[in-house]
Image (tube, rainbow over all chains, first blue to last red; front, side, top):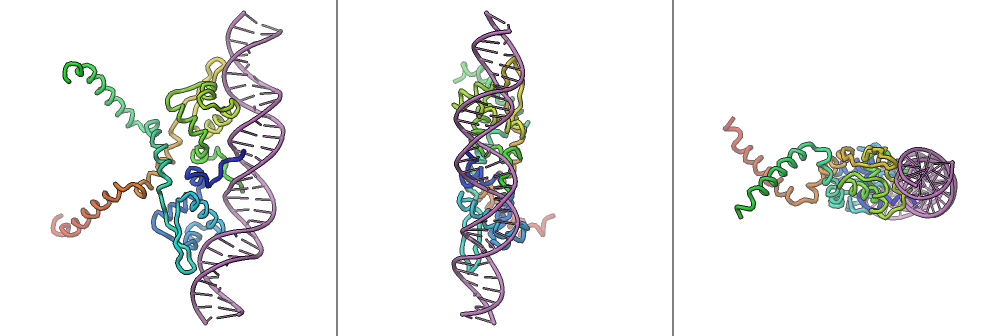
Length: 118
Length: 118
DNA sequence: TTGACATATTCCTATATAGGTATATAATTC
DNA sequence: GAATTATATACCTATATAGGAATATGTCAA
């Protein structure tokens, strides 16, 4: 089997840096294709193809305006990535260790006092 | 050009669901390869190969213990993903809209009062 | 040292790109 | 309607998989 298609989900679509760049630009406001071409210094067909992938996973939407296609961001499909990766934040963020300690202390305290008080 | 190698960065490594599964298991504690094989119901060579990819991007580390290789998680390479995707949270989270409104009000208030004070 | 166990590596195949180039499609203007 | 502009699509190539099967490597036990 080959790798999963880039259009499988946001994880795959966003693995490509060019596509993240496109989203980063669109995050500042909607854009017709040619603006993206100029801002990213990427060939027009490449931009169109990346946009197609992003469209298929729902990360962008299009509006027709004369002969232009105006693309806008839809971040919602990124939520699963956010949710997944957030669980790992504690593994690199030391503040979580501190928080864990506090919670641990509270728990122990509760176990000591808890039985007497309700 | 083909797609970027899976070992290019965490974005690419983690696009594969099996590798996310492996990390999810390791998040609960280190494991020798065979435990992963059993828990994921995946063939041993496949697991070893996925682990190799994860090793190359630094998402796991190995310790030799007799004839076993005990793998443990290192979440740090996930931080760039977290940082990137977090910027988009506001695009799907309505609470940010509410926050934006509050900030907008504060800003307007400041502009009204600001000139007299300070 | 022979065999059992744990893991990694090699070889195979089908498939899917990303970018380049050329071209098709569609809207607009003169 | 011919030329121009904006975008999408088709075709090509090099490359990299993910999984399956077989095998190599390394470790321990009897």
